[in-house]
Length: 237
Ligand code: CTP
Ligand code: MG
Image (cartoon, rainbow, N blue to C red; front, side):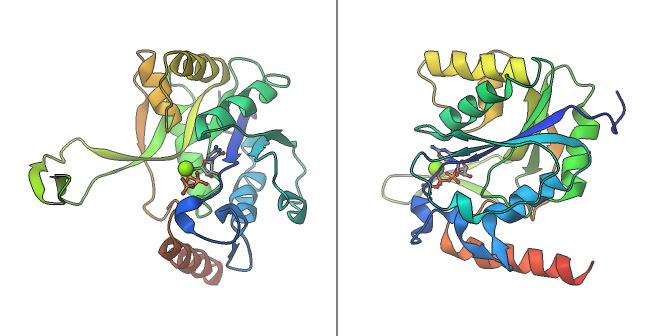
């Protein structure tokens, strides 16, 4: 399969409430570099010629989505989210199964990562489209890692060699990922990323080196860093 072949779908979990952000609305609807966070995230995939369509999982009480007016020439489908991120993703995959086959590739990407680049999307697809399992964008850990006690004292220094931070997108085949998430949940394992579900069923996802500016907006100070990255990019294009 060549990189220009369509057949790559995107699932965007956007049904969280952003508690750690402590804002007056879910973080995906906060203003950022002239648009809303979710608009930046969506446009990266809408503009990518490799992507066939997008499924966005939204909170059932979401009143902000109608403000978003993405000009998309490709299918942009919404679905109700669930209790945790993994339930939102599973709902989106089940919706996608109405249009795509079990072999279709799905890239799951957090709504809260608006700085994703075309470069990262293209590298992930190029490296994984012939892979038997799939994989994720990730970055090797550079900081020295400490394991702390409940009293916040250092218990030990953790060897960081071989440790990676998991980012998104995470890319797997629709059928494999749906089955893995269902098995994980049935086993009482509420996974925080797709790779964990794939690992749970005994498979080993690939690690594809991602860019460090693909940050997840989690706490208030992350927003100004994202703003800096996006404005810098606009100035350089
Ligand atoms: N998400 C979702 N459904 C949920 C919980 C989270 O679709 N039930 C989405 C969020 O909208 C976000 C992504 O999953 O885009 C990553 O989750 P996180 O950064 O934890 O976002 P929130 O859960 O919204 O934030 P917090 O944990 O601080 O409340
Ligand atoms: Mg959360």
